[in-house]
Length: 580
Image (tube, rainbow, N blue to C red; front, top):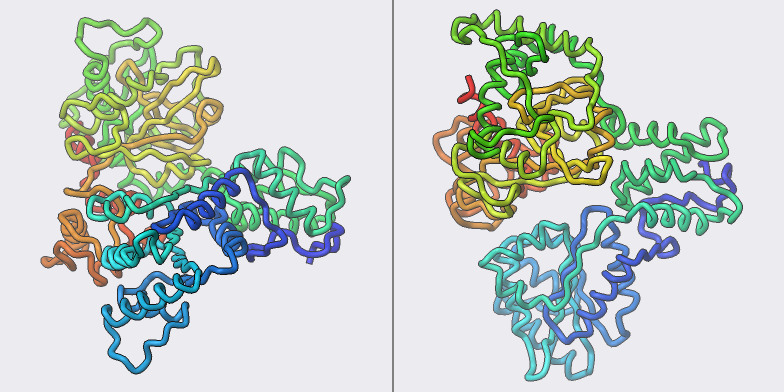
């Protein structure tokens, strides 16, 4: 539609895989080199992982085009098969005739073995490529591993390429798959494009479509926004750039600006992709009284007292336990805090038990209204909420556990039932999904590492724990320059859970997850015991779909975080009850 308007021969940002638009960034070249090395290494497994849309299919096409002519390849695009179906599909791909015989694993394996020996005798290689391999269950992976036992005295007869999302690499780290993992001769994780590569990628596709070298459709500021919104994922870049060009065409503009990028992002990614939500004060007062009551009850959701002013009873109730947690995190009581981190002692407050429920709700609503209308507090050179990474990590731990905190602020393995989940997001909106405290990892203007303990978001302000033991409201724009999107949180890990669970998995973690769903549904009997069956997979998919998660039927951290929240077993909820 718009390509003729910009002097292009065709639409440059189609999401269909077109070899003419192949853009090989340094990381794509590395990935292809690893695959080619693995294919030529004489057998075993080759592993390629990457997030959705990073270009794995493009790499696959390049690999197929560069395979020698003496190579026969079987491609499995739908791995949602059992072991028997997989072997049958491989035989079909390679043209192995097994018609008229009883179909069994032994029959198909014998047929495949005979074909591989004959192919080897003719001087030909055989490659099996499995896409979306993160969906393979344990039995199928084990059968695939056994295929590599087909060998001569000198080399493997079958080379297997596994391609999937990052959870595939995590799946292969499981102890029961260690034999398969040890047979991987080449592995590569394809990362998204960096800002410079994003600019080159956009320019490359435009030039292939016919853009002359003297024209610029995407200025540098627009490209920066595109990279930030898409996180450098090529497929998302294509979708966003296509819609942005359509917007420029509709406005009769000669190039795309930042406003067009933001509008395009809202259209293709949703309203939350660029805009923060509007003030929630209206529905918080009209329809969110129960939520405000919960906020008033949770100690870390209350505002701190202001210097020289006696705090509201709810705020004081929140400040005292937070102060105790900070003191524990800092060490012995006789170690004073630095002067710039100290805060005035709270004034005496009435016994919270003497407040009625209605009074607590009214106080919370009044506090929220005052916060929404007040001007944001200026950030000093040493704001009270700014902590060292160690202080923030210890405080987060103390808010959620009475156990001795670990040495690492975000340990890789669960400690005393608490696991640490670390991620990076682009917008504040992405944090609204977490109903728990979390640590924002900051970089100060002097380029030192720092951190802040985020207790909640309200409109355009964040509530942060302070080193003096209170809670301070800070404008989001004051944090934006210090925060690059990195954060971590703590969560209650099910017994035995060590990684994503999928169809065919077994162990105590599967039983624990099945019991959690039974509790959520109010059912006396769980859908599964120790084996992840199809009934449990269907229940997981329905749960994920209802909670705006990827409904892949795999129980990962995000699924468990939402499940913990709905069941009320989240550690932050347990801590808030202790603070009442």
